[in-house]
Image (cartoon, rainbow, N blue to C red):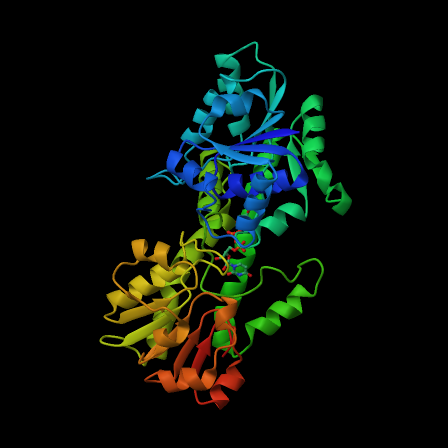
Length: 434
Ligand code: UDX
């Protein structure tokens, strides 16, 4: 099949490379000529494990190409996927759909023969209707079906999420479109993921509801962690104790500094706004958004308390800046609010992250950056672990203790054991473990 991706950002690039790996002929289109040039010369603009070799292999084997020329790529396609950004609109938090609508106008001008136009971008309910209206108005005679096909890719695990999905959601009432989408995903049938056909609006809502639910689950365990600290209980054991109940499930119950990233913060906000506008407010989601926002700065207060109540003039080492491991993405990373609050309180901060330091320099210019974990913590008055990279899970603790000026460790991801750390003489605190 011939598949075209409009937008070569995170979703477009991962989806395009995976579709090509299934054997489809894929063209990824982007208006950013520098990005397309870089991709054509083999440079991948994002860090995602396995993506560089997947892109290289499929380019070499002639199934994956990159271009700024939308026209040819759309004319020959069986399915065109819209995978452009939907950033939060400045001022009101609604998703900015201007890139989606522009893509719809660009696509319809070039359609030739029946074509499925599938939206992968996360878009508010009703966007598919508007995309269809824009396209019909521009070319009433064109033969196409607008489908919703949300992605559920986690950064850092996007390729395996794409190739081994829990489900594939396809929102359309058009039988021809259903058959095209079945063919597009046919290579996955061996793994037999459920293919869920729904109405377009339902499919659009599934994506938001899934992310809002996961954000709620994280926020729930984070508040339980605070309660654990107050009553002398252990949040990891509570998470295991409730997670073994199949109705609850054990995933997304890791307490930490609050969720960040390119999806949860933006999508919970957009869903909340839509619901308010439609007079069907989602009070749980509203609370989740505000609890999570407050939590990030609360983590800085936790660090300050662990440092004896003040950090003015102290040097704080921060390990991990990206919003989660295996990505260089700094969007809405808890580290930003935590580091900023520590600077506001008079500390100096030195940080290390295996992949995100280039991106971090742009958002956190007022701190020092270290090349590795040990030089980061050398001479620091406290060590804060903000992101649970594997490289930080098995540090040489004797070296850590010898490097720190004070043996203070605040582990915001619970990657060490408190009894062990205390036995080694650290003044250790973590999340939800008194
Ligand atoms: C998420 C969804 O998982 C994915 O399905 C969707 O398509 C895009 O958004 P992503 O943002 O890449 O993916 O990361 P995810 O692994 O879900 O983590 C999001 C945030 O929640 C991170 O900041 C992470 O540290 C935090 N988190 C996650 C927790 O604090 N505790 C958990 O138990 C799980």
